Image (cartoon, rainbow, N blue to C red; front, side, top):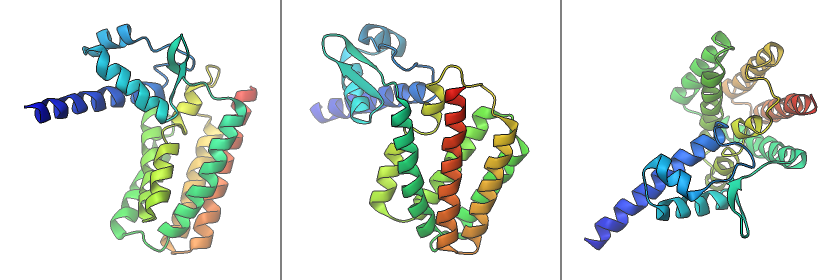
Length: 223
């Protein structure tokens, strides 16, 4: 009976974490916004305990910060934080792409091609493009077969790129047409390297792609 109750409690906590994480990543909970337990408990229909534990987990993930005597709030990234995150992604995803070039299965490659086609065909559908883009990168990361690299990048992707874009209120809601074209061209270059099983080219293409995304974000931040 106790074990069953603990299991149910853990499932509820995981659900609360998933909900809050999704709202933060999507920008529905804004940077610097206070996460009041009373309000969250009422909105999610739960007690304070899973809310408190969920906030602790999100703090450990770097999505929430605890302010003594004030409570918890959504983190707000500085320009330096954003640069650090993109630098980490550039290096580690480059390594993942290099490894994936020699391990990628035919099924994974086919899914990457399908995602690329979807992003190219629907550049204005920002929500779906972001999800397709996330899946595109996740497939390559998973295909690397490198356990700790995958684990680290999974954590980094909790912050990037959707949450980073949502941190800046003046960033336009719709993607820049020119950047969308560049994104698709860069994805195509990554795909060519993966199809050729060229590790060096795959690493180079992935690093350049992420560095270009960083430059585009900087351009928007500086407005």
